[in-house]
Image 1: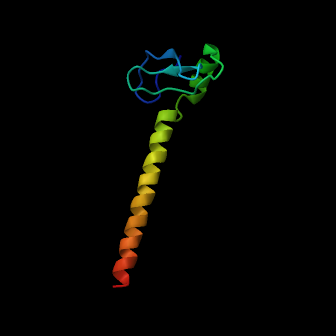
Image 2: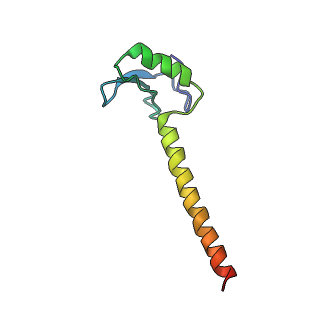
Image 3: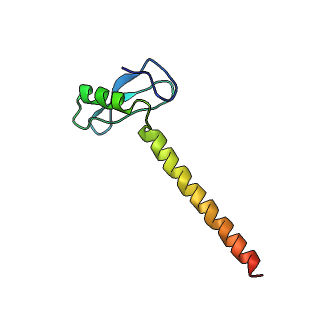
Length: 87
């Protein structure tokens, strides 16, 4: 299998998921996915190879959370700007 696209670790492995599927995981940075929902290790490996160089679920969740935080900060700044213009 290809090494981890995030940290380059070559010790990636197929792991069981909580939902009964399989996924490829990196022991070094925690990168994993995509998940094979039917528990097929070959499907999990194929997904990993397809994902190689793309974003994993962990990074995607982190990115979405950060985007929401930034949108909230922008909204606060706009509110402050609009409030100071009207004073």
